[in-house]
Amino acid sequence: MNILVIGASGRVGSELVQQLLDKNHTVTGTSRDNKPLFDNPNYTHLALDLTADKEAVARQVAGNYDAVYFTAGSGGKDVLGIDLHGAVKTMQAAQLKGLSRYIMLSAVFSLDTTKWTLPGIDQLKDYYIAKHYADQWLIHNSRLDYTIVQAGALKEREPTGKIAINNDSAGENAIKDVAATLASVLTANNTIKKVFSIQNGDTKIDDAVATVNK
Ligand SMILES: NC(=O)c1ccc[n+]([C@@H]2O[C@H](COP(=O)([O-])OP(=O)(O)OC[C@H]3O[C@@H](n4cnc5c(N)ncnc54)[C@H](OP(=O)(O)O)[C@@H]3O)[C@@H](O)[C@H]2O)c1
Image 1 (cartoon, rainbow, N blue to C red):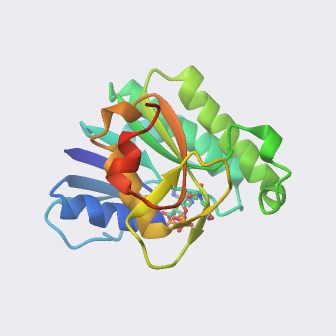
Image 2 (image 1 turned 90 degrees about the horizontal axis):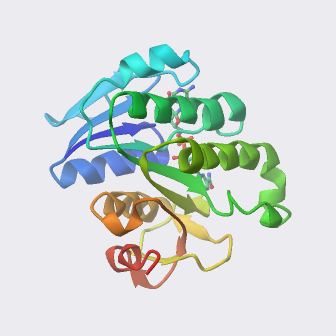
């Protein structure tokens, strides 16, 4: 498949691109820099600034992509400009270009405001507000075939290849397992128009993804 990964220089995004390339997909990856991130004939680099105006973002999302991933993020520095408005501009661009599949990396409990007082999340209120409305926009204002994957705290630890889904805790995730979950979603049509959370767990990733909303 021909895939766009927005945020390809990030911890999750770079791992996702590598896993997609390993599966012989053709990948265009974005960061703000012009410098290509991967030395692979199936990789194309695109310098994309999510704070650019809507038309500029739309002009750059020019390929005939089978799927768009959003793994970019502000790291807390410009949550409105990047996590909310930046994300929505890419959804609008995807829709304008007639693309349908859009896979969003979000955060556990992004849509459940009652959980925002939990320790850890309570420190991230502005980020959560931004992700909340970005996810809401994707679900209610777009016609995209979305999947929203809500990760717990990202940890740079050895992956297990196993996860739990929707276990109602904030949880933690090995970064490579998050990337593998995102990669698995690509061919799991049962995840279209679905939102699910992931935590470290005991079920093989493909098997866990296959149970989404069953
Ligand atoms: N941290 C957690 O525990 C946690 C938990 C759950 C969910 N998440 C979600 O997971 C996402 C990915 O996390 P991560 O650790 O992989 O992120 P990361 O390493 O900080 O990477 C962020 C990515 O966003 C891009 N970016 C930042 N500002 C941009 C801009 N103005 N225009 C275009 N691209 C921009 C960066 O590209 P440049 O190279 O241009 O900087 C980079 O590719 C987070 O953003 C968050 O929404 C995080």
